[in-house]
Each structure stands twice: as structure tokens, then as C-alpha cells.
View (cartoon, rainbow, N blue to C red):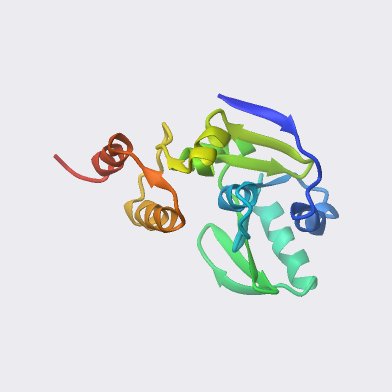
Length: 175
């Protein structure tokens, strides 16, 4: 279902990944920042994922030492900011592949690990090129989160066909 490919160290992600390399823990970036990068848009935030809560907390402490400001502490993640770029630090899953299952549309199902290995849904680049929103087979089931993401993506020029819109509505309405 997912493919692995080596990725050239990009000018954009290298400083962000390097900022956490000294921790010597496994982590990955996933979701919208990669989607935005591949369509030449500046990401507003970068979502980092960690294998354990302890690794995530170490990352937060290191980033605070490096001048990041903690702007929110949520139940499952921290939001930090520096120079108008937000880092969200999560612990939810054990691998990049499992993280991809959390995303509701194929154009969000992409991850880049600390070793610059890219994990992506087999339709990620195709759907990205067409700017189409296709429901993943494992939607999140959080109507508020998904509705906001759907609205944001539609405003950014993505489109959703009737069948995928019906899938979205069926997931969030009772018969």
C-alpha cells in the first residue's frame, strides 16, 4: 500500500529535521507540510511524530532551548512557534506508515522520516497533481476536524468529486 523512496535532502526540510537530529530518537514529518512543499506552497506548520511520549517531550525541551515558544499544550501534542512557523509535536503512532492511516485524504498521506526516507500513499502524487481530494480507506471520523480540513483544502484550489463528497457525508451522518 505504501512505497518507500529515497529523497534528496531538500533545502526546506533539512534545517527542520536537523534541528532534532541531536536527540538521537526516531521521528518523522507527515501530512500537510509535505503536500504543500510538493505543490510549491509555503507550509504554515510542520507536524512531527515520535515513537514515544518521552521522545516527543525531549523534542519539546530541545526546541524550547533553541528559542521556540510553546504556544499550546494539548492532550496529545505540543504546539511551538519560532519565526512565524509552527511545529506540532505528536505521539500517536509507532511508524510513518501507521501515521498515514490517520489522514483523511490521499493528498495528505505522505511522511518524511529523519533519514530522509519518503513514505506515501500509492495515489499521493497522482491526486496531488490533479488537486483532487480522495477519501482514504481509513478516515479519522472526527467531523469537526475533517470539515475544517475539507473547507481549507477546497479554498486552496483542491476539488472533491460527488462520490468522495458522499463518502464524507455518509461517514458523518446518521441514517
